[in-house]
Length: 317
Image 1 (cartoon, rainbow, N blue to C red):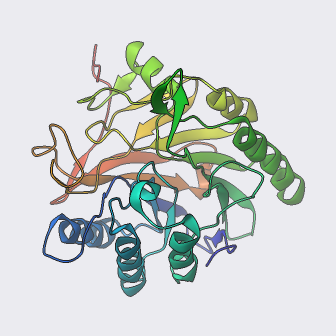
Image 2 (image 1 turned 120 degrees about the vertical axis):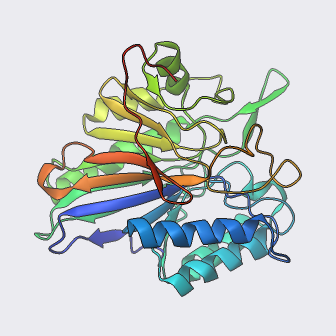
């Protein structure tokens, strides 16, 4: 389904996204954590009926990465679940060349994916347009590739969204506005949190769980500033830190971690403090009649519990 990156609401008022993240699929040879993750996705689909699943990276890792992605694509096709994907920092650690991975994604009937421009760093920089019943572009879901790591003064650190990516999404937004008219709102999905997640936490703006350190780039490339300058950004949605799920309103933009969806233990994926951390997904609801803001966002937890992150007096993550 590569290249077909438009979704039409028809006469529906609401568009619902289920953000899944950090599945860390490593083997389908046994009844291990991979089967638990697929069962949870099926549970989310039945309970929430999302229009689109968005996987914000680390779908698979280790040496069976290729077979895991193939099996995941097959599962989503069998269940007829539409989904989009942005690379994390692990799919390319051990796995096959990205062109091999992308063939499974593009051959999948229900995967909405594009490699993105060759002159932009990364392999999953693309936009998914959501159109209302009058064929007006209401929301743009931007998928970005953080890439893996970079060398900084001899140290391996998290990579950042670079200038080629910033130039691409700002220019692409201008092009879409020229073609479709101004007014569409933007939501960004990628794997590694921006430095602004740490700033929002330190300022006391976050609500939810912060159970491990924020592993964000040491270099602030100005990606968030560019998103702000676009004037239409509603939210930024990330994963990577497995047992963080907090959200924050920061300069008018919702910064949100997803809720970890994978079940790998310390031997197969590594979830510190994770055994008692119920797996789930972040749900994002967009309202055609009030498209200039996020209608709702909350966490769906395994077993059906809904967790809303609402600020209490003096509350912090």
